[in-house]
Amino acid sequence: MEREALAISNCDREPIHIPGIIQPFGSLIAVDRSLETITHASENLQTFLGTEAQTILGQSLDQLFSSELCHDLMNVACLPAAHRQRLGKHELTGQPLDISLHRSEDRWIIELEPCGADPNSSISAVTRVQSILGHLQGQTESTAMLEKAVQALRWVTGFDRIMAYQFLPNGAGEVVAEACSSRCEPYLGLRYPASDIPPRVREMALKMPVRAIANITAEPVSILSDEAEAPLDLSLTYLRGTSPIHVEYLTNMGVGASMNLAIVVQGELWGLFACHHAGPKLLSPDLRSTCELFSQLFSLKLQQAFAEERLQNRRRLTSATHNLLETSKETLRFSQAASWLSEKLCPLMDADGIAVVEHEHVETNGDTPTVSTVLDLIHHCQSTTDIVPIEQLRQTPLSPEADLGKTAGALVLVISSTEHLYVVFFRNEISYQIRWGGNPQKEIVEGKFGPRLQPRASFAEYIESVSGHCQPWSLADMDAALELRTGLLHLAVNQVDLIEQEAQ
Ligand code: BLA
Image (cartoon, rainbow, N blue to C red):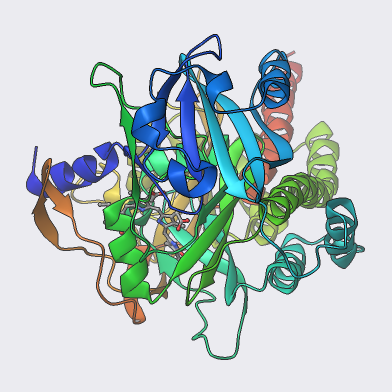
């Protein structure tokens, strides 16, 4: 494997789910499957429970907790979907602790954390979520919703900076909305490469929608256990210790504490609300749960807004398709439809040219490559799916003599591969700039597992000029193409009928 690929895969392999450490804002113990014997304890147990971690290993849970608390834990463990459950406030050694429980492989993990005070503790979580959602009232457009959401989150949490960070199809991400203090330099519109957030981190964000890093300078705390014990999988804990690589990243960025909330659309991680603070900062467990609930409700609203945007787009196309069907009832021939289709469809598809292909016969209109290049492209798309978006024709294996003219990208609609009918929309080349939050090319250093990427030291804006691409084909374009393909299929079928009628 080449060194860079190895460096990326080594970064991805960092076992951040079993770090063996927690953050010091709470304490953790693990208990066996039957919730009886303590198998792991974090070294700082003394601070929260007054008991030495080492002495409690192998002991029964009721040595540590009252029978009432043990009973409560048992009840929660019996719930059918024992996901992650907060048991709420318990006074154990004078200070109220927030206790939560979840299953990790064949262990139960119990986390203890001071309840903490938050600025508006008199306001219930439900009221707070209602008021944040109230901010979104009347917003149906996704960008406006994201803007309102970051403002509301900043108001409720007090973080210096809240960003809505959207993942792009290639795994890179962009700050699409931001609310920040006047002391912060804005990151809005900046892009970051996929390698800043390894795949395992994204998978974890789906399982654990809220993740807080309270203080990047705080000394992590080890988890003690018998040597024979496997390391605990901390994926679902609030306290999981932070990867040293990410600590370095945040330090370079001037961030002292962070919190992430997952934005999930149709089961996939669409993005994150990334919250930053210059110094240490931790929200109370209640307020974190409030934010988690908000991001879950917000995700649903965003999903709804996207569905609505796609529906509007479809409506726009229905009349064009209807028109196409009406015309095709008359005498429009598929192979001669290029100019008609160009006039009607190119503006809708934001395309600069069109080619209609029937076997080896090619009709073009507007800006297109040469006929032989169009045929070459069709040959390349023959075994693929019904709609093929291409943003960089230069990167497709076309013949070396391919003459693209002004075009840079194509959307190939395979109308019928058996009848060899294709419609291709072309878009001309656009040159544009990407504003990266620092040079996306990273240094490679020797790490514990061999070469790995080094988090970048500078986050200063870095402009990349991109050429050879067309305006990317969006989801809306793909939807439109799907709708049009149906109309064009009818046109092609009608043509067979017309030919048969003419032959009689
Ligand atoms: C984690 N990296 C993260 C997280 C984010 C980012 C949001 C989730 C954890 C968190 O901060 O709470 C990246 N944060 C960003 C980006 C912005 C931001 C892009 O605010 C933009 C504004 N990171 C690297 C390299 C590696 C790496 C080279 O730059 C690997 C070699 C790893 N990133 C990395 C790891 C984590 C991470 C391991 C997980 C940290 C943890 O939870 O322990």
